[in-house]
Amino acid sequence: MFTSQRNRAAVETADLRENRKARMDRHLWEITAVRDVFLLAVIVALIWFVVELRSVFLPVFIAIVFAYLVNPFVRLAETRFAAPRPLTVSIVMLGLGLLAIGAGLWLMPMLIDQSQSLLEKIPLYVRSVSQRFNLTGKGSFWDVGNLLTRFQSDPLSMLHPLLSGTGQAFGWIGHILGTTVDIALVILLVPIYFFFFAWHFESMSRFVVRLIPLTHRSYTLHVLGRMDTAVRGFFSERLLIAMITGVLYAIGWALAEVPYWFLLGVVTGLLSLVPYLSAVGWPLAVALKYADAVTTGQSVTIDWMAIVLWPSVAYLVGQFIENWILTPWLQRHSTDMSAVTILLVVFIGGAVGGLFGLIFAIPVAACIKIAIEEFVRPRWQQWVREA
Image 1 (cartoon, helix red, strand yellow):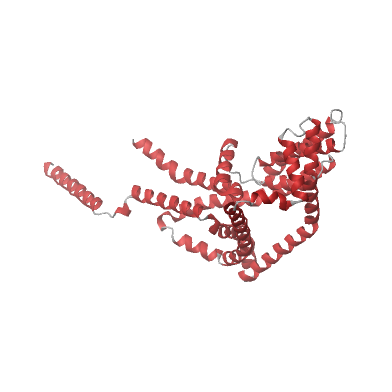
Image 2 (spheres, one colour):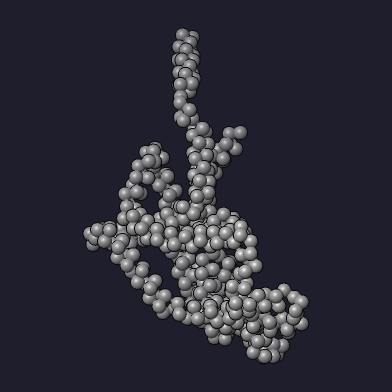
């Protein structure tokens, strides 16, 4: 019996030595903690690199998003009708282009007309409101009205003080030229990038899948599937909600006789892409209704229902339809984030990426949240239990 115990102890000692030797012979990248830290550092460095060169990567990112959104339709045409992917992508691009041209020819004249009319009326609105509150000549309202009036009558006289300094002139000119070139490059490069990415989207996806180790592939694909559901649901469903609410706001404010109702409805609908941002349209509608009433000499104190109540009712009805009908019906794939988190994420996205940061902040945050739930939280809980 003692002999067997000694043999068992000797075997256990030998196993411990082998395990210790195996741990000492491991490469640095075979240590889980080191590999996780390195992967996190690579992700942070990649995000920093993309943010620093966002003007270069912006067309690429927009094209990838569009290719990602239309890929189900391209895949369906490829599998069901055996249509070549380049042909399907070309048809999609042609259809989207014709749709944009048709919408522009139908809606753009009204949009441009109301925009020009609003720009012409702003000085009159400002002057009328300033006179009503006795701010003529001594308030900022009157200064703004005078500046707008002078700019419309003689823009060169307004630009002369601005361009009086050579360095400042070159700075402004360079900024305008740079912005114009950036917009032109985005408009030119996005269709080219979109065609390439949409054509090779499936092959690129398979390439990325092959980079995932076999031992973690199934779980990683499960996490990527969750992210795909959240991102695709946000973009496709949120875009449809924004289009419907834009139409509802425009119709409601037209019935309430809000001036520039179409322009205001389009802007508010676009702002609906970012949750809670469409609230900007509410005070704008009331302000425009009030300024128009003051300018035309109506009795604002008596007609307060037409000025405040009906534009507000139109907005609140649109909000009710969006929050209680459209969102539960269309946006089934919720990001599962609180209102405070969404607002914080939107502010951070706007500070980092401007307008596109506002739009893409929520889906990116949803993906980060899923990654934390799937990868970080289990290991953190395990570390807590073992500590």
